[in-house]
Length: 154
Image (cartoon, rainbow, N blue to C red; front, side, top):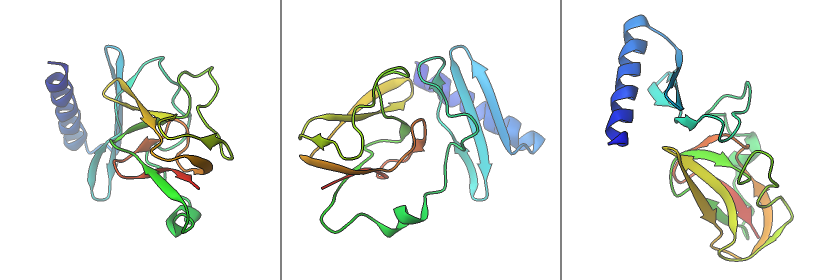
């Protein structure tokens, strides 16, 4: 199974990082790229990506520190669309396509808002609400955690 192979690969990379006291390691295995980054609290896997499927944002840290206004939370009347799984956030179906939605767009319940890519599977995330997009929180290509806000809709 691919999942077991991926787990073994990640475990091997973690051992190499620990053995050589590395802060970061990026390895291409077949058509997947694994990038692991050491953090203060331990190790974090930064998600395998299908090569050529979507561009990685050059120079942007995979786990970006949230902006100060994100910490303030959404307005009281806003509905939050949270990530149902951990994955890489993409605003469009492919690098050269238009974004599914942008700030100010009117959306309907069931409309696709973005894609979350996890383990080479591209998951369309749909809105549970009808309304207007107030804010798109993650940057395109950013790793988001399960439960993290993706959109605020009013």
